[in-house]
Length: 225
Image (cartoon, rainbow, N blue to C red; front, side):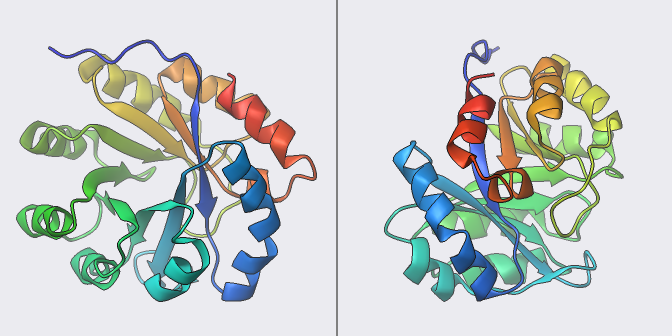
């Protein structure tokens, strides 16, 4: 069995969890700083107001024009019809991962085809109420290299860590030590250490980064855990 090497530095992916273009433009100076510090992937949340109450409808064309020359995209699909959203984003040459929720209604074969068509990676995400046995089944069927545990209620960023997720991460990593676990939501200087101790290899952080007046210090603090 392939075993993931010990975690030395924490991987950190900035999250763009916004419902309007103006809000994205406001944080661009901070995102430029993160680029200079080595950030090369952004996590883009898309939501239709049905799978979650949040509506985040920004277009692939907007992000391609604004960020496409500097970043790869990880698209977090929080929609009633994940496959339709994946097809919408398939025109973007910057998409490298589709993150699909196991709680959503999707056809695995079609999701794999959508990823394969643009050479993107398929990643499974599980919310607080997700079923671990289903995640295990999907990992067994697909041999993915990465999964994401969402540690806050789905929707807009700024939620508080649900610590039950930490136990789930420990359980998962004990069963699949070769699969990287990223935690999305609830990240701060205190919870990040808890997440790493539970077995997380990476963090997806939005409001904690964007609300900081010392984003370089905060980013360095997370990556150097």
